[in-house]
Length: 266
Image (cartoon, rainbow, N blue to C red; front, side, top):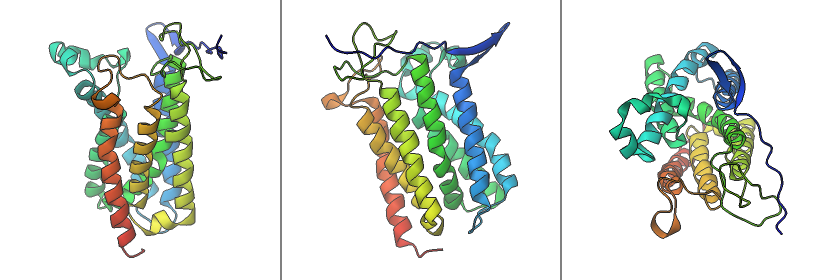
């Protein structure tokens, strides 16, 4: 019999008062945005200066709207378009779940470009700061997925397999923790090291390119252990929607890296 680590059943709702309920998933978004904001605020004062702490404070609201609106629309368009086109009002029921990282990154990108142009900031350089902080939100988001018992992995016999409440009786990969470790912790450390050395500050676009390539590779690898989306299943040659959506990020990230390395240092 396969050894199985007991899944730590945690109530997805942290606490509730009457009709108000604070969920771990919402708390993950709040923690990611707030800690990311503080981290960028710390980076903004180091040379070469891109903007001011006030710019970072004001961008927090723009980033929040970009994440929520982009993440929701991305899920609607990428994962369940037929369902939501038949019931458009369901798009507004965000409390029922359904967010896409790839949609969220598009939303934040649009918000960042608009904000930077409005403030007269260098778009790519300001984007480097946001990219350096992005893994913080990814880490907390994947931990929230684990607490919710969603986005679990494929059936396996590895010693650290878990039986998830929504995944049937078979032991599965805790793929949420894989992604939290790779997309969140590892990618953050890589970008922190680049920023700490100063190389990412002297070559605009280097942090953006590293984040895009790093996330794409981590996500495409983690998808090998993650159960595919139930509405879509496996796609061409056993690939998944997550891998296909990550591939453009890989290509764009490589372009950013090449251009950044070709530019003279600031």
